[in-house]
Image (cartoon, rainbow, N blue to C red; front, side, top):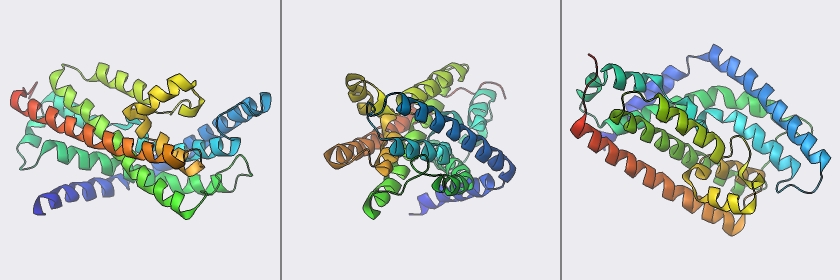
Length: 270
């Protein structure tokens, strides 16, 4: 029990630090609301051009967009911490290794806190404004209290999957001279395969079925579709089970890479 308190302390410290950046959060709110509005208008044009040919209703799609913008900080892979990459490259990682903590657990706690602090500052204003946007372009209510509760649970699990994937990128950086290349590829993969650019249901069936098996679909795809009512029944239960599977597997892989890196770590610079 005592071993977890120090990681909880790292979480609280990083979370409270992240809450101080209110001006940046305000700029993010404006940017995300404008971007969300443009996406809603884009989908509106698509739905009007060919009604009835889309896998999600316009109301569900618009809710998906607003939730995506409100919780952007939780699911975007490009919100990795430059401080961690810099410490690996410039040799400051040596200070981290002197601490009596597990490096993976410490960075995981910090990364979670960093994402949640950004999301807390930005989500409520975006959700409040989106809720008052006229239907079907605004944020609709979930179908039931149970669906909302499951949305919250999968929201946290999806954030855990995203953080665990980013932790893999941090760990792989120990074996490279520069993390820029692997970071760029990883961010692009998440953007495309997770449904950040185009919601996964909009892909052809064969492609969609493959995408849904990948860990990226367990990030934002599951909670946002559960809230909008597009994911229900056995398909929803399968998606949740797969989400938990990828969460456990990615954390295990990250810990294995961490153990391997600690055996062969070489400090560059100093």
